[in-house]
Amino acid sequence: MTDPAESWRTIGDVAAEIGVSPQTLRVWEKQELLVPDRTGGGQRRYAPEHVARARQIAELRRRHGWNPAAIRISLPDDGTTDPVEQQPAAAPQPDGARLRRARLARGLSLAALAREAETSTAHLSSIERGLDRPSTQLVARLTDALGIPMSGLADFHATDATVVREEDRAPVELENGAHWEELSMPGHQLEPAMLTIAPSGSSGGPYSRPGETFAHVLVGEVEFRLGGTSHDHEQAADTATVGPGDSITVPPNIFLSWRNPGDIPARCLWIELLPPHAWSDPMTQRIVRAASGVTPVG
Image (cartoon, rainbow, N blue to C red; front, side):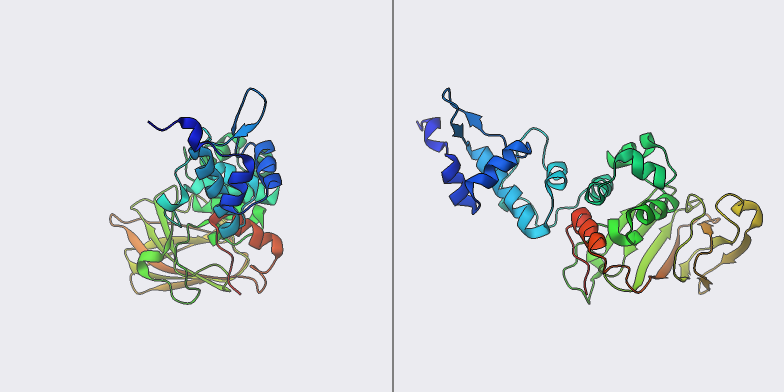
C-alpha cells in the first residue's frame, strides 16, 4: 500500500515540475489561487490535486495571459481541479463569466459598470453569475462602457484569423430570443454576424452603434425602428419591415431596435462597421484577452 506521504511535493519540487519559481507559488498562495497543506512545523506540502491545480494556473497564464482575478473565476472555489491535460484547450465558459473577467480586467466594480450601462447592480450580478442573460441592447451598453466592440464578449473557438468554419462560430445567446453567431475573429474593422430571432424576439430596446450597420434578411421578417433617442424612441422612430431578400442600412449613431413580428424564427446576416482603431487600444486587447482568451488579430 502506498504511503500518502510519498505523493507529497515540496514547494521546490512543484516549482521545478511546472516551470515557475518558488516565489511565484508563494504569490499564488497569497492570492488564494493555490493553498497547500502545512505540516505541524509549518512546511508546505503539495498533494497531487495541488500540483494539478498549479499546472492549470500556469497554463492559463501562459496561454491566455489572464490575471489572478480571471484565473480565480475560471477555477473551482474549492481549490481543486482536474489536470490541464483532461480539459479541452478552449473549454467554453458561461457568458456571465466572460463579462465578469472583462469587468475585472477593466478595473471596474460591479456598481460602477452597472451605473455606466444604466442597469441595476442586482441585474448585472445575476448576469455574471449565469442566472440571467442580457439583451442585445444591454450588451451594447456594457461593451460601450468597457470600451470594446460588442463581439469582444463572444466565446471564440476558431484559431485561423482569416477562415472561420461554421462549427467554429462564436455563439452568444441573449435575452428576448436573440442568438448571435460571430462570423470572424476579433480584430477586423468589419464585424459580421448571423442573427437568429425567435418569434416575438427583440433587441430588448433601442441602442446605437458608432459605425454603419447593415442587415440582410435571409428567412422570416424583422421589424426595425430607427430614430429618436433612448427615451423617446418608441414615439419618434420610423418603422420598416424587412423580409427575405431585403436589406437595411443604418447610419452611425442612430438609435435602432428590432423585433420578429412573425411566427417563425427570423435569420439575417448582420455587419457592423467599427471605428478604424476599435481593436488596437492596449486596454481593449487586454479586456478581450481576459474575457475570451483570444488576442484581437492585427
